[in-house]
Length: 333
Image 1 (cartoon, rainbow, N blue to C red):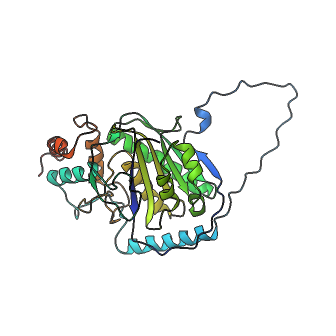
Image 2: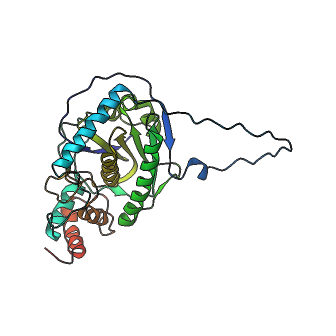
Image 3: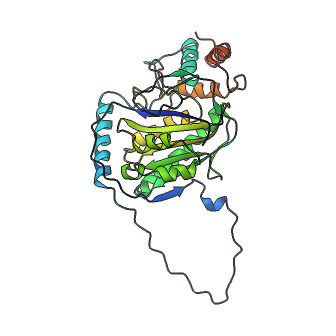
């Protein structure tokens, strides 16, 4: 689409490459409320002697390819190593990670008013935070999950339930109306395995008409060091999002997949940058935390406070941000 694409990702250390086999990918598009809840139903025609329909045999999902299975094994091992180092915490922060109003304000400015990638730069190894105006949603967010055909049914069910609960929390923090199943969707979340992602371009172009080919290429060539990513889109000269697209690897073990949902869906609401100084936070590439922390929740609340407005620069927003941080933390500086 024409306009500005803003990108961020959950990433880790660079990883050895695996052999690639390109092929065709099949798709299943799933929304939590189901499409039938949103579309008018046809009038039923009743027959006096209508034969009963034969029972349908469920169609099995295609098997995971060898490439995808190797990647799943890689991420299983990676998660075990991270947990052994005390990373991927799910406690939201604790006494070992204190912060005050001054740190909260500093971290908000760095995370919400800088962009991890300069405009037009989709190279995952050349992210350079640049100052940006405050960006957020001004319209209801209508989210849809899109699963690749090789993503197992039990994984889909678990992910739908997890996302349903999580967007309820995000809605409560931001005041945004965030729903699943309403059409047309404006926040697409694609959960795909390796072979599906390598040929994802036509589906992405269908969901986001006019998307920059460089963005599509960056998704299709996503390195193993990028666990998941999200793009947000604005119209030229505007600072409110019109669409978003997240891509999450289906090969991830459950905790890593959930961590991707937590980070990318939150950052798809506006806080686009990562800061190594933010702690406790998932808006940080060190992978210490898997789930949204107490500080992250405050950052989201601040971002959607009406005293802040889309397009504000860091200099313009700073006094308001400092006031908000002090109010939220009861003046603890």
